[in-house]
Image (cartoon, rainbow, N blue to C red; front, side):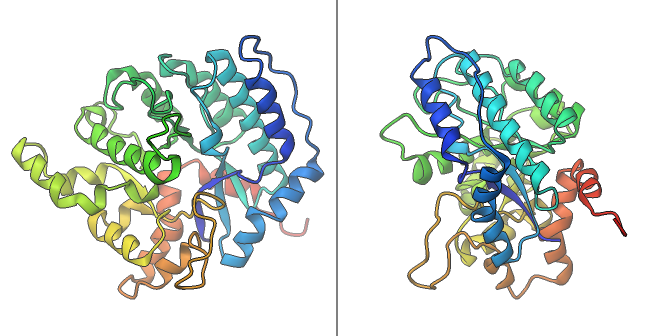
Length: 341
């Protein structure tokens, strides 16, 4: 089985964005209201979007979450974020119910600037226990690059880390859109935030205090694998654990768009700490003019690495995902058709 751990519902029906526009235009009077989208509309957007591409590119299953850039935690207050998050997660759940063999849910959280991550635990538990989700996306900067948020290594985040461990679900660190005009959301903000997240966690006591916590850094880990020598040197100067050992506490995905970059990631952190991902349909939904292939068809990059063994490939495409997302096996069991049915 080929499992893509990083997919967003970027092709969601227009009704969802109309709901959000109405919500933003009434930030001072937050009400949840209702989202009216038929199953037929969901099927249409999935079958002509993510599912069509999965079939064309040879992917079996995607861990599916709301569109990251639209989490928009910097809009309004805590109640606005909660209502929007619940609506988005419920929509993902409907996708997973309609296509249980192709999608498994990962939730966004109702974060807000300055509000304790403790407020996310209720929604996390609902999504995992009631909706069957297997992970969550955590925004390390709910201000949208306009304010201050404590480091991911700060005890401010500990209630959320404790809940992740208790529920046995990993957290993917993923910012939303940048509200700072000097930081391009996809080209700059995502990548610098990934880099910062990895360093914040590895310079802290988080993994000492939560040794079973699983954290995924997306987009190939930002700059971390490619600046490995810099971070090894800094760790040496500061007399920390050797960085090449510390980095094994994190997991990274392959949502990076060249074979050279994927090889660098694998050599830096090792096969055991890398999970296959494409982030389709996402940041770079375009054809590479050099190769004539889609940038986000990331499976071809792994297929092209000759030094990977068959065991390596099985780990990258399947086994690592099942290990890092332990609840996934149960969801796959439930989705498997019953023989003779």
